[in-house]
Amino acid sequence: MATARQRPNMASLLREELLEARGQAPAPSKDFCQLLVTRRQVIFRWWKISLRSEFRDARPGEIKESHEDFLDDSSLHSNYDFLERLPVPLLLYIISFLELEDIARLSQVSHRFKMICNSNTLWESIVENLCDTITPEMRELAQEMGWKQFFFTNRLRLQLQLRRRRQKHAEKEKLTE
Image 1 (cartoon, rainbow, N blue to C red):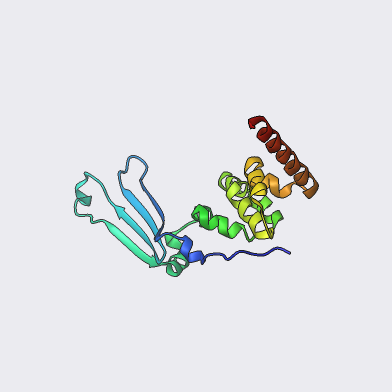
Image 2 (image 1 turned 60 degrees about the vertical axis):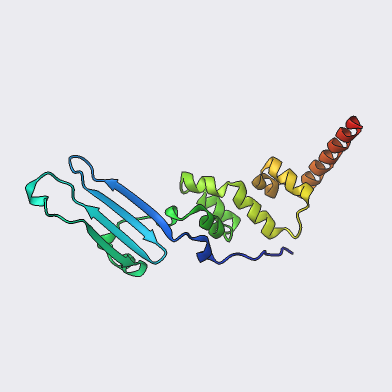
């Protein structure tokens, strides 16, 4: 059966700074805010920018919360899709554990997940985890036709394509001699 390769620790795939979003409030306001998510905490900062005299003494604000406190405090977030904002290497790692049907369903969630679920990187990982050996010739064919296509092509068709490739290479070698 298939052998699973050693997977890295999930936390090692994360950068220290996981997400940073910043922007200016809609007009007429000129206020500025920043959301920073690190491995350890969620930081929300804001700056009141105004020519009005009542806001001249306004200082920048900052709230720092642990992830648990942030999730428990509904005033700090609203309908925020955390999965959608994870880094691609971490998403690839997580998705590689899913069943094929679940990968197909996930690919329909958003444009981003469609791209990730159909990526050569994901399917190369899936093929490497499920196949005992991948010869250099098989790897070259998979890179040529795409890893997902390679995965779903039946064995007889793959053997036929590999045989044709060998014949082409043999013909090219004869022509160069």
